[in-house]
Image (cartoon, rainbow, N blue to C red; front, side, top):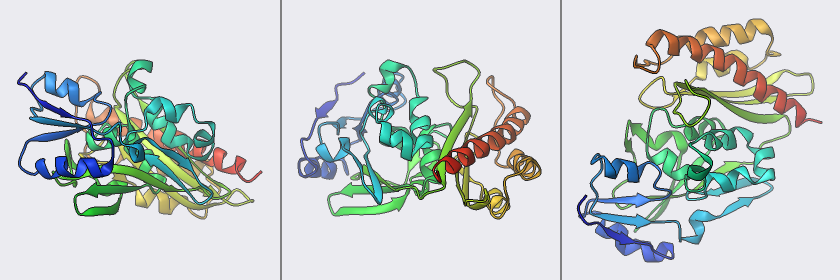
Length: 292
C-alpha cells in the first residue's frame, strides 16, 4: 500500500480546504473504516488522502427532538444500539445498523459509512428510506438536503460530489400508530451480509386499519427497491392474511437478484416474499403498540 495523507479535521470549517483539495486529489472520507480499510488493503480503493470525520462534533451527535430525530453520519452503530429512546422511535433503523458485523465492528461502523459504501446488500439503507430519512450533504459551498434514496446510484457509487460529505440524517419523529421494522436473511447466524433485506414502515389507526405504508427491499437490485405497489396494496386494509400473502407474492417478483454461492436468483425471490410478509406484521404490531 502506498503512503496516504491522513487528516482529522476538528470542525466542518476545518474540513472545507480538505474537501476542496479532494477535487483534484484522489480522496476518501473515513467514518468507521469498516469497509474502506478492507477495500484499501485489497487494492480496490487507492486514495491518496483520507479525511477522518469522527472528530467533527456535528457528525457524532444524536438528538431526539419532539418533531424530528437528527443522527450524525459518524455516530457509531453501538451508540445507536445503546439509545433506548432511538430504539423506541425508530426500531427498524436501529435493527439495520445493529446487524452489521461483530460487537467490535459496531463500535466503529456508522450509518453514513454504511450508506455511502453503496453496497446493494447494505443493511442501513432500507429502514432509513422507509422512515423518510433525509441526508444533509456538506461541501465548500454549504449544505443541501436530499432523501436517503437519492444517495446511492449504483453499486459502490453515490450522488455526492468529490468535495462533499454526508453530515447527518434527519428523520421525522413517528406519529402515534406508526412504526418500522427491518429483517434480513443471511446464511450464517451473524457477521454476514444480507442475501435479502426488507424494511417496512406502517401506520395504523385505532381499528387496526393501515393508513400509510412504505416498504423497501435491499440486495435484490443494484440499489434499494422501493415497493410503492405493495404500499398501495396495504393502505385501507387491516393487514389480514390474504393481504399479506398478496404483498409477499408481489415482493417475490421485484428486482433482479443475482445467483451466487450465497443464494440463487429463485431463492432470493422467494425469501423476499417471506421477509416482506414478516416485516410488515412486525412493523404493524409495533405501530399498534404506539397507539396505547
